[in-house]
Image 1 (cartoon, rainbow, N blue to C red):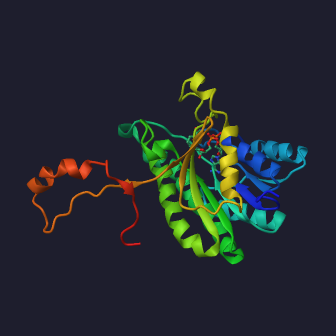
Image 2: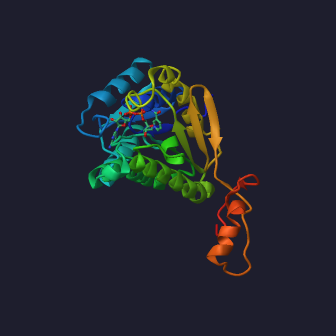
Image 3: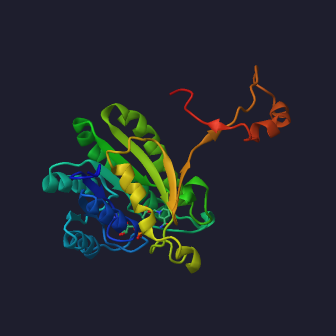
Length: 287
Ligand code: NAI
């Protein structure tokens, strides 16, 4: 039997794109799914129930169990209402897939507070609010699965996406600590940086490149991370077009100064400081 049977999983932003694919796959694997979507446009404007409803209908038509939520993940109230929906409809919450997202791209010199805040609110605060609302349930039942959607734009940078990249890498910071705090409660927290053809990427990458990136390639990896069969935690995966890769932070041996160095002494050792050829996976020296 699948490690997802009867599990209750909340998928945010599941009314289209990747989230829809995650919800459909989780339901096929026997999970009960709360399909959350605010139902707005790519830039976060507008709202509606049609997107979430259509995915719920699709799941039910296939014999699965699903319930719709139109809450915004961007507020604590929305996230609490979303988790309450899982509890009220299905009696529990075992996993959250923090997938909801918007784009407000623009070069940094044109960045506005409004575009910065809107992106932070949906991605970083959204991940925080939804996971925070589910966390007491996870601790109490000694089981929980957190997946966040990060991005290669956060891991490596991308022109015009300073707000988005900062929010996306913030989510990696979040799961790094959740993995530590959740360990003794059977809670895992991982991140997936998807690469997929959706409305989010339709005008960002060339069509022939996107044709190789159906969202269906990403969903099985997300489903595995949510399943009780997967106990890995604190990891980041880049997933798309058939490739599933792990990404990690590496740290080199660097140099050690016995006394505080002069600026010239730092400069003299700079080549050694930046050389990553002997780097190994990093860990928190104060952890
Ligand atoms: P999408 O635009 O199809 O899906 C995002 C969904 O989130 C939409 O259905 C939207 O209505 C919903 N949403 C937006 N604000 C919301 C809010 N406040 N509350 C609830 N729902 C809200 O885009 P896609 O590509 O499926 O993106 C899914 C996730 O994957 C996003 O977090 C995105 O940043 C991330 N991602 C996608 C990549 C790709 O290649 N498609 C690359 C890297 C990351």
